[in-house]
Length: 189
Image (cartoon, rainbow, N blue to C red; front, side, top):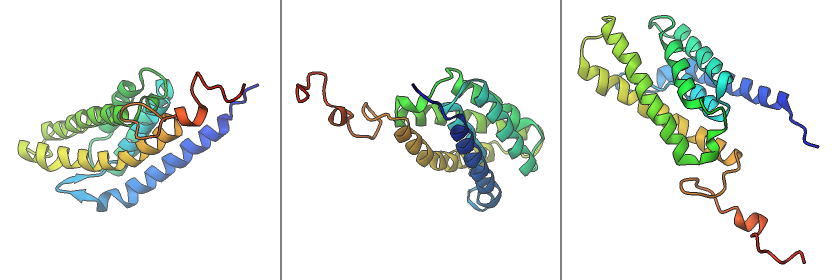
């Protein structure tokens, strides 16, 4: 009989959401590269969408975007809408995509993150917050992406290891063959 501990999953989600919120409030304003800042709300949104996906991932994307909107001076609802689309794109398969390996999860997050940050900063330029396209790309979007991607890497590594992905290209783990034995193992005879 298999028992699923739903509360453990909820506790770990709540703890990681609170940790990302605290990091977004306390660390992100001080951690900058050019005019870009690390986006811990995006890290939580991407990790949750890749780990759980589906409707829960979209809801987490909307709520983390809403928290980001409340913490910044940008237009209210812009990042929550972008994070909702970001979470939908990452979690549309509704499965643990960290089981695909470290490189696959980084590629999925990186593609979605750069597009989301570009859309956010381009909207800010369209709204008249900034008129310089060089600043849009090289001083805001790319530094924000780099810092957010660097912050996502340890989270992805941890979740890949937790997902039990022990072998395969890009997984970074040892082969699971030595742990379980091979199909043709005769030691138990």
